[in-house]
Length: 492
Image 1 (cartoon, rainbow, N blue to C red):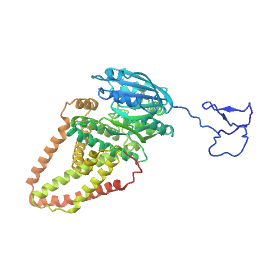
Image 2 (image 1 turned 135 degrees about the vertical axis):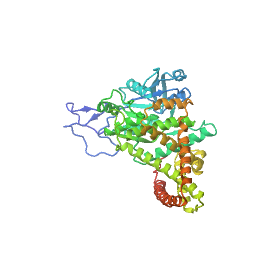
Image 3 (image 1 turned 90 degrees about the vertical axis):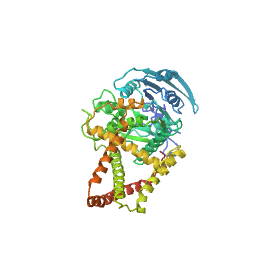
Image 4 (image 1 turned 90 degrees about the horizontal axis):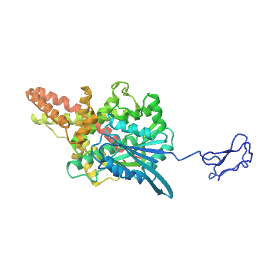
């Protein structure tokens, strides 16, 4: 019930959105007491407009599922633009079957959207060029919804993203919680890799959720951007478009820029999306090395022309933690293996039950992460509880970590986008390089060890074991802290 106003034609004001009278200066209310259910001044609200942009590169296998996912939303985007680029398969033909106007009734309300499909042929800027083309197509909308060509949104994802975005004008962008789809994975290696990626993404999502839902990366998988924030980024950085090709990780760079201008970058508490995963070691290596290399590029000061690294940026703190964590994980495993083999070689090995504590804590933490996955399967839990699969996947990730840092420190300027595309086609052998280098290094260490006198070998073991013990204690305490930390009902 709206409060009554004194009828004074000279001072009466009408809300332009709700067409209800509003009190103004010099206007007196007819009464003085109002119940909580009564509205004195109606909120000036209106339905926001959302333009969805779907960059698609060789997505013939998934593009129809992606578009059907958008069309069954409880809140339809007002327009959907599929931007096909650098494609050699039937992505355009399959997407075109869903082009046109679509009208649905949701909760008794009729909603209409239009799907447009654009084939841009060969773009030098690849996905970045497709995103910027889509941005120009939806200019005038309130929000831009970016969805990858292999990402299927939960049916209420757009509605939930919009509700969270509109509830706080400080939010410049918000990402859905995404997980890897492993339903159609074949047996053996593909299923193992997809399960590992599900665990990796779950840990990443939970870290962001528990850090005030601050999202370091508004990933292209499924993110809603405030158009005003994108325009502010362009003006502040003198950019022609929101996304630039200066970085290997265009989404991370844009997220940093949005955050730097005073907007917040968030991960949704409830909106969800399912993404396609990598089913071969080659493809996974290409994707992860590109991500890691791009993150390092942003962390390190002044790497790419005018797009300088920002090592102390708030959005990069989690990146630094990830890299330091991977360094410690690699160091402890290598050091333990070499010390164990060295002790066995001179018959100086003595087992202690205390050594079982770190693996047990790691198992408990992995299981808790697996149980936090919404829609988890028995494979997710078994992967975490048996330790061996999780440990193998960790070694794979260490290989990606080493490859990315090696490329960066050697000032390699290869096109990592092209390298990932090549790997996804099943070409290239670079993913085996960490294994080959590891074998050579271990062989060299073994040879050096055999040349040392017994006294020197004993001295190395006497120093090495305590150093490893200190590092492991600190690492175990950090895992325990994560293990006992409250998750506040969040699901990854």
